[in-house]
Length: 455
Image 1 (cartoon, helix red, strand yellow):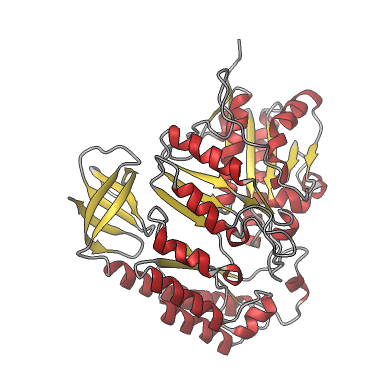
Image 2 (image 1 turned 90 degrees about the vertical axis):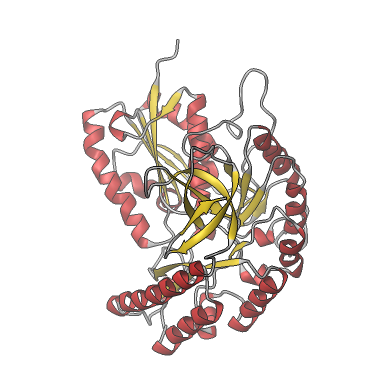
């Protein structure tokens, strides 16, 4: 008889980390750990970390500091640090936080059950931060009659009707500000047959929407010389679109330099491909883009935007922007504001530059003062908020196909879902099942969402 044990997982960072946390939760479930939202009750705590910005890393250390008291009260508690901070810091992390039992990098999360068992038995630090040149997800196999594999179990941490599916790992671009190539390794693509098998199995379970994940999905299937090792990303999208039961396909993230005409054309030819594209630009200044090693110009970026809107006029575009990169002048910053006015993104994730270990930019000596960075970020976010509100008001009067996600947090009796273009909609309705698609007439566009009535 197995005694119930509880596992708590805290996730920092991007959707790739969310997917990694989901997998770790599933694997802990195979060790008879049930999920809990109360870390004080947990027998295992996993902190899945992000180090892409200094602020996220400091949040991790702050949480670990608070966990020291919890470990003192409950010595049997196993504390694991996973993700990019674990990969970046390695043994230094445990030297700084002696109460940490496991340090495990992004590529090694599949060893978590083994390390948890060893930590429980041996009571000493378990570490797995090796980087591999190959794809480290085990080959997919359908669930056996005796049980369900970790990749197909339903997990409380994510809605049952939509799932993330990893298609590649790592990055080869070496942007001068980015730590990802050092924490997640080189680009390597997953076998297409395994991806199709996993999504097919998810569809059989009732999943209706999948998001294909990779640090740079545009280069899926390519090897270091740029040639194809498997199939291209557009071809993969076409194969996923033929899977019965899947209604919506999304993907993230893309690098502008690798955005091909073939992929752009997919938005015109694949009905299930949602008209939403997250295309990080980082800066509106060619001079800063060159210092960032982004390998494209603003002119080329705008050409790709124009091509996307030509084949799919209703496409929503979102982006990432860094302000205060070393050497950024007022003129460079104004170029970024001009880019916002020209593209008119539906949304933007914007951040102040911060030095990250191992990156080239950490050695740049023309750093922008913190006060200047903060002021530029404020100006940029205010400008983008104005654009977001204008964009959302453009939906007023239209009828949108919305996939229901659950009850709205805004008001009792309201439900919430997303349009194909990834805009949140809140609307009045009797009880609905998540994953169902309904038509909603939009009555009001707000800053971060839409309001409407179900037809």
